Image 1: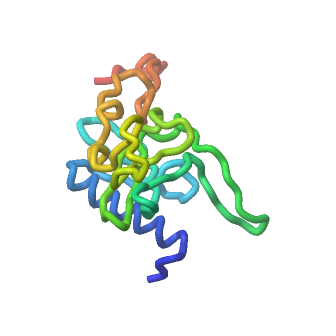
Image 2: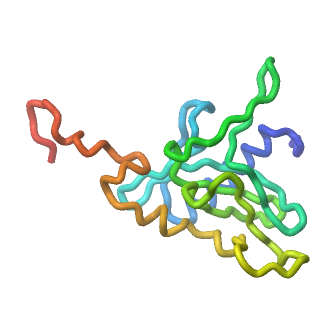
Length: 167
């Protein structure tokens, strides 16, 4: 396995996320394209969640990444900010801990920093501990129906001109 190849790392992160989400009771669906803004869809309790997976190694006791998408083509490397409305959940796989960490994308401005070990400067405030992010955030699971977050249907979908009633 090519451990330094970006695509291989991404595939490993998605595989780890699939296993972790499956163990948490989700059914998993995969998009038919690599160009979707999410890597997989998790389904549970009649709800769909679009999940974007990131592979990040720990550096200096923390897992850190910017909320950007990167890709390369013949014109070079490109960066664009992640459209938070196109995903419901961020999953960060860390090969150093061999764990998946979950973050509500709306709780992030631009950068996510998850601490694995205490900072050397003894900072106590405004720290997001990695061990507190191993479950799906309640802010993601508790989204009210009709809020249009996730893959919910638009509110007027049931008011179509179809010649039959929906059950």
